[in-house]
Each structure stands twice: as structure tokens, then as C-alpha cells.
Image 1 (spheres, rainbow, N blue to C red):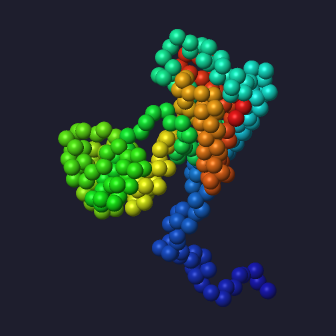
Image 2 (spheres, rainbow, N blue to C red; image 1 turned 30 degrees about the vertical axis):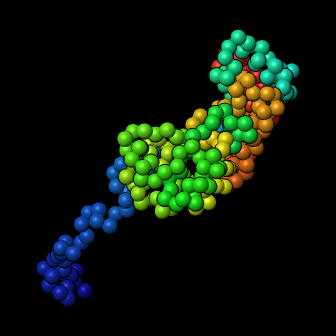
Length: 291
């Protein structure tokens, strides 16, 4: 056999390269994963690190808040066990001695009650009724009913009226500390809403100051005081220096019972607790008492 190479097809057809069309190839990076984009992996790492840092800071803050609450509870327990802690009668004896020579009727005796609560806990607000009121409250009743007017005066209302009382308010004459109204006066009171509202004197059904049961409501309101917590220490007046020890003790018990009842009604798991309680006047030193 000779050394000649015999091809079944022409040489040109063998050496010819196939043509490839690039028209249907996907664009570069079109189906690439986001994690493969330049700098994306690095950015995710930074975000994760920042998230971990925020979580760690949150845990630290939570632990610090718990330590603070426990410290306040321990201070309250230690204060009661301290030899400087007194019963109310003994504390009043020292307060009266310090206030000798000053007008007793204008010297206010107050309670400073520490409220122990975690961050974000609801603030206490409500009312308490003192068995011996600090001052006589002037109560106004807006009503068109002769029967309701008679009941209001019998219960102790200072001022009773309808359109004539509304006119006095418009003229700037407000000689009352609390206001109540019967339902028939609600629409007329809109005339003085901007005057009474900012002063907290606008009767409202939500607050229980618009009612047909005027006699019982005003009778219960005698000696009633509104309180609202704004700081961790709630300061409330409980008497004057000329009150008897018995009257002041009754007032102290009324205030603390009202606060505890309010706390027990709260649904929040972060409800506050009563901590160290101090009795004092403007000039006397604070004295820790047992309540």
C-alpha cells in the first residue's frame, strides 16, 4: 500500500471551524447571584457585625436595667430596717418640732414615694380621696334641672347654674376647682371648651364628670385629689402641720392604699412597686417611714 492519505471528504470541509452565534448567550452577570456582586459579601458582613453589636448593646442595657431595679428594691428593704426609719407618729413629732414658730395652717406635710419599675413601665395616674382634705374644694355644677341643682347644693356644690354660669366662664370668672355637668348641658358647654379644657375643668363623660347621678358623684369627690407620675418619685400632700396625728395617718393610709389598688389593676407585667417612702415638709429633713 502506498503512503498516500485518502480522505473521504474534501480537506476544506474538515479544516473549516464551525461558526458560533453569540446572539443567544446571556449577558454577563445577568443570572449571577447577588452574593457574587463586587463588594456585596463584604457589605453583608458589615451589616451582620452591626446587627450583632446592636443586639449585644441591647442585652447590656437590659441587664443594667435589671441591676438598677434590684438595687432600688434592696435600698427600700434596707431603709425599712434602718434605725433611722420611724413610725408615722414619731416622724411627725420631729417634723412638728422643726416647724415650731411657723404658720401651721400653711405648712404642708408630703409623702415622697419611690416607684420601682423597669424601663418602659406605665406611669401611675389616678385619684385618691383624703379623709381630711387639705383645703375646701369649690365645685361647680352645670345643669338645667331644678332637681339636679338641688341635689348638687345638698351634696356640697359651691356654684350651680346653666347658661348664666357659662357666661361667667366666658367673661373669665372661674371660681371653682372642679366642674360637673348633667348630660343636657354637654352641647352648650362646647362654647367654653377651649377655656375649661386647658385648665382640666371641662366636664367629660369619660372622666365621670358628666352624669345624672350628681348627688353621689359630688359626695364622693369631696377630698378627692388627682395625681400623675412624671418622675420615679411621686410626691403627694397628705396634710397640714395643724392636723392631728390621727388625721395625717388616715390620709397616709388612704394615699398608699389608692396607689396599691391602682398598681393591682394594671395589666402590664412591668407594673411598678412602691419603694422607699419619705415624709417631709418644705423645711424639715426627709424621714423614712413604714407604710
